[in-house]
Image (cartoon, rainbow, N blue to C red):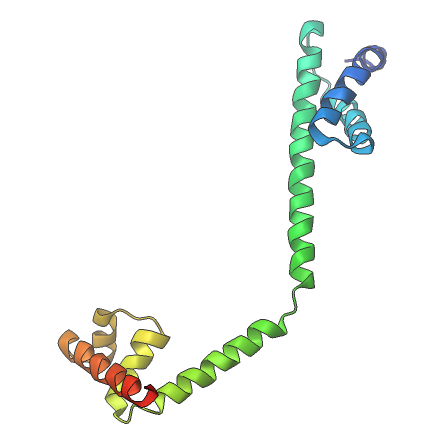
Length: 157
């Protein structure tokens, strides 16, 4: 489109496009900014859009700009929230969990049983993986875990 056509399109559709965007955002300043951006993008693309399709094309650009604005604001909110959350909370809770696990493991005197508990409960390995790591049978791993849990239960209760 040439600059004269853009000017005519701006004069003809700016109010309707502004109302469309305002209906989506409910914020007049943002609606005005995005209306301007729609016409800037129309000039930048230099497409030959038929007159009867021009309003539809502008509304499509506006809709995409509104979506982009929502995404940008959502990202900014998440980023600001992450910046406000103190990081020391996760460190302290992780430290407390580590101390609790150490206390519980002190009730298990058998070294083999401690290894099974460590691999299964703390590291999250399956029974099969634990058996492979320890070069033991799966039934031995199950039995060791059973005895370790019973020792811990007996000392806690």
